[in-house]
Length: 566
Image (cartoon, rainbow, N blue to C red; front, side, top):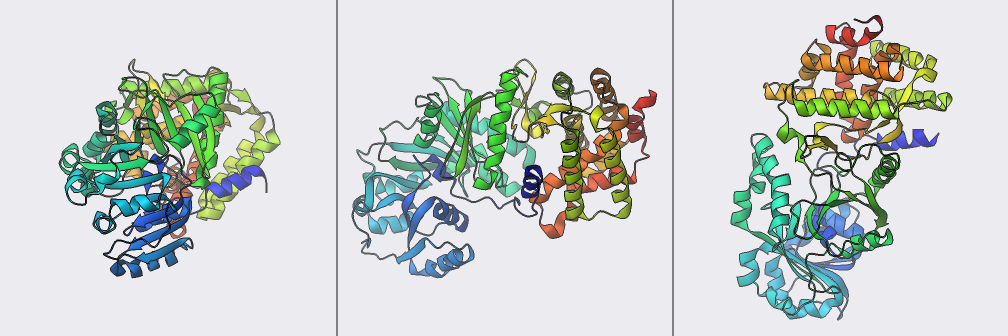
């Protein structure tokens, strides 16, 4: 099996990136280091949080009430957490642990922490250890007396945190109103506008009003640091410093959005009194996804080296490294408003037109001949084989794809490869101050990518946005209306495709196989987000089936008949 085939199979294993499978304890990213050593959990951590702490720590001691022991044992057994042990919490507050034994104390139950008391917790915590506690501010100051643990402590941080309840997703130094405002504007308000009816419980926890009322706060001690809460975590500073980038004076804000393990933890870094970040640090939440960040690091380096785009429209690389088995990537920030907040959601939207023009220019300016035809044909053949293994398509679909594969193989020397972004959906776009499109998340980029795939992907995704504005939310119906039918977006698709072919000498006879294989590729990538038994429900698999079943649709005929000038 070739390296490409191994990577393809690894990225398309069903069920390995399911929604909701991301582990908890995002607060770990705020600590000076992710190698946690020995951890004392006062109270019962949530199962996903306990799993993360056990993964990052050498040993976890859970000091919990007897009523929680069975639940903890069940979590330990189900998740195979062999380095987690349980101690019974006693009201006398004595911890059966030696002095200076613990690297991290995390308080999951302030009530139990009140049994222990600040002095006992300070006794077992190493002088360079970390202490983490999050509760509403009223609890911290008036109910449990733990603030005495922080008196005179170095590295004492009071952090603003959100959402109002549930897993911590966002944080910033409480005194840094600009950093807090950035997170609210970037993540909380857009969610409220877009998903209020779809996810009312989730949205309610993220509303500015709920967060203002609950006043969720984090108290944290970092014993080996000065009392400078604006500094990014030490492990991020160390990786940046090795690359010659100094960030110790930067202010920061933290976000861990999304429900997929492939989504990254983010630090936004600000300079001086700026209200917009100058750089972004991305950290994998699961080491299996490290290759994605490494690929982005190399892609951004090539974009910079070849002077493709500029810092307004794409990030530039700053530093890359690994810590605790997780990849850490620093890059410049592309500042702008989310595309979905600015678009008019019509085929005449100037921001969508600008995206199409940028993608066209990216493709035309980077188009190049195939250097190894045999290798390219092998990659496409491996892609089709993987698709067949996963989805077991019907005979009609298989027969059509085999024909398209033959067409690509027979004309591979006439293909024009391009620098492909790989995932230019509206969610990865911003609109900059001058109206230019900014492209985020180059994790799927390929300097020898397939032509037109970025265009197909963006217009299909934007078409769904257009349909949703008109009240039609079904992806299949949108695909038919916007791409397969002679719509305004279909006209843009046909015209832009023709311009690309004219300017790069790509034979128009290859447009049809490229179109079908684009959805084959998307379906294979989507497989990791689906349980094996639900693969047939995949969005891109069903879009492909629609394209096959309706290959005589007027919109497709316009696209596929470019050679005749129709």
